[in-house]
Image 1: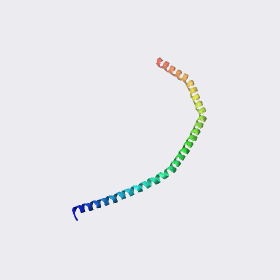
Image 2: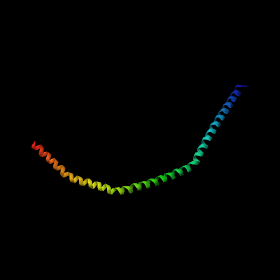
Image 3: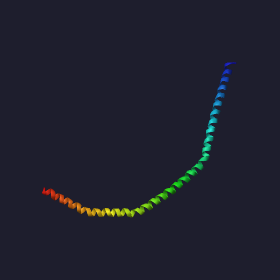
Image 4: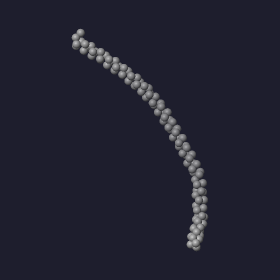
Amino acid sequence: MTLVGIGVLLIGIAFLVLAVYLSWTLNNLAHVLRGVEKTVEHLPNQLNDIFKETGNLINHTNSTLSDVNEKLRTLSPLFYIVEDVGEMSRKLTTPLANFNVSRKKKTEEKN
């Protein structure tokens, strides 16, 4: 066998190794793509479920907000009553506080 024959044999072996490696890599890639295909097939059903649950969540949120608003409307008169009582007590205690301040000044002036 001449050197050219040995070189051609080595190139053939290298080509065979390269072909086996590429076929193995492409087979793994095909396996990954089949997995992606299965995932993509299930995606519309999963998205439908997600959208349905999101719609239910929004409906529950709206009903909860309506309930909170109704309860706040029910409590609003109570807050107005508390405000009125606070205002009345301020009006009643302000003259008393002013009187106490003036008495204190007079007492300090005498001392």
